[in-house]
Length: 211
Image (tube, rainbow, N blue to C red):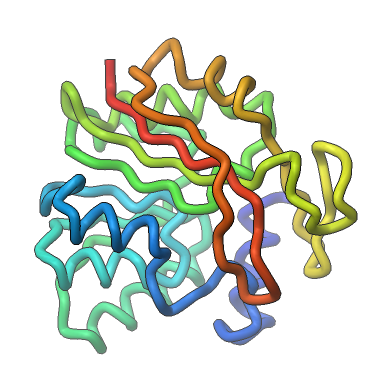
């Protein structure tokens, strides 16, 4: 199925509370990075922003945030939520493996929380190149995606189908190092446990700097 159509159907047919990745509270890794000053308020792009929860949280903490998502319905939710929260964010419907040249050199920080595992290996080099090109020199990039060691959705295999019909790709640390290395200096890549709506997940956390 076309991913844009599939995501639009999910945001049309399911409530935000039912969508597995839609969590109102920001992930602790992001909270810690902001509260410690590891990531300071700056021009930020939230990749795969969904309903805008993390974009809005960052905007409330002084960040100038642009959210990008392939789903028009998700972006509609995000715009309404930002208006309701009385914060300013810029949201755009875009394909993150398409032409993003309009954003070239625009951002100091790129956030990818649970987007990478929706992108299959053949599309990942284009995606990572797009993230690189959107960042300013020495811009920071944080990516988090599910690890192949995660027991969810059958617990084995690189490709796994979820109960809502999406297919995810589960990575290893080594393959992510190989993916990121041409475009980014690797600050840290670690396997971590993160909270999920239906239990914890094993995921790979990657902190990177644009080459």
